[in-house]
Image (cartoon, rainbow, N blue to C red; front, side, top):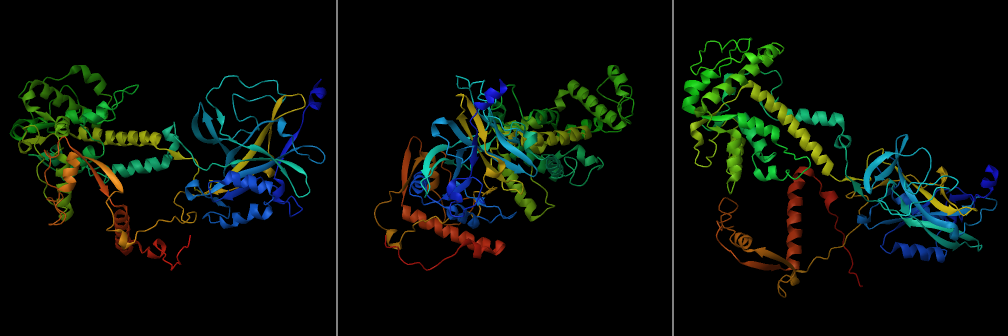
Length: 615
């Protein structure tokens, strides 16, 4: 029974196309052919070359030498469609018996190829699940049907599904059959198809997309970006000093607090309501700044006179180690704040440093609960008030302070801008060592969360340019056997394509000249300005139209046009010759200026005398 089933099989072999070794009388070029074309009509050109017998081994091999410009090895580097280069994969299907006659195209139900990545000693395949790319994953050890919903048993008993589910399996690209005849009139069945060299995917597991040691190094770098007590720029284990209790005094922040505010406002937009609302529709709802908001809510601006008279004494950090039974050393509470015996048993399990932090937080929370007159304004409320303003006053204030520090690193900063009738010069910010410790931890977590979230949204390219990014094309064909059942046949290892690399979009060795016709000076003052047109709102038009360049670039460059142009819009047209010439002039100015730094002029521009083109 088994032998009877085996006799019904019709073995098929995929090999290099006949023209790749037609003039060599050898199978030295046994790989599936890769053909390069430099025009978009490459499919018709390929068909025409096959019909007219114009392809030979020289055509399939000569161009490969031109593309051997990799920095890693001598493998050819295939250009991208953006370089106006296109590639065709071609192999030949024959019956695997004496004489290797051409496979009858009527037996072919479908054909295609997959692209494998040769990552060192491991082979990887581009995997798709429910229509979504998962990226390069370890390739199957056995050659089965790449389509999970179409996977057949070797004897062809299991048939493909009748419905059309979302594709799952290894990414495939089609090959098309083509009848061809060699110089001796022998018939050949070619399989050819376009080789796509683009594509990207989104990493589901963001941790898998990021190198672990690199993430740790980056987190350490971020932690060292801020000075103590907000970061570790000065090293870890720094002492807590008295000035750290008041990072903002009478509205004037310390330099460390200024850097923290700049980070919270410019990077994380802490206090911006639109950022909070943009995440409410997610499932589950996410607030990326929730941890920072909780800490900023506990950091309170207190009227400076109360801070010096009472609160400063209440937050002196000379606590005994027995929580709930001792008040701060040298301080008799005038507010009648009583100890909390409920926390006494669990408190004994903490380290001395943790006890100190817990004492600070518990005592201050009780004090502010009894006497809310001192808890006048939280840091979060202040930041929210700034973002509620039409123009956030903290942004120009930050720019001004950066300019002051650039001139004098030891300069005293100006007070924070007032917001919503709150004069910041009357307020001082209170902070404890435990607050700073939690803030450092939360800043690290916030950076990690933002990094991993961005990693999920960044489209990762399918083809990289690292040393291990080497690729091969593996063709396959599905054909009917003698029993009328569909079977799949894969190209043997020697019949795969040559190993190749893929060029980067801006690879200078892969770029081809792009002709841009520059205008003549005679064209600058001819005709109407009817080239590039911009539909411009009234306020934008008035702003652009009122630019004052007489006094150079400065604060008076843009006039106040808040109430101008209401209800009107304009169509502004520019002369294309003028726009092109201005772009070239600005380009050359920037090239010359930056040449002082990069010394790149020999690689930027090559000008050759060129005869006029008569066509």
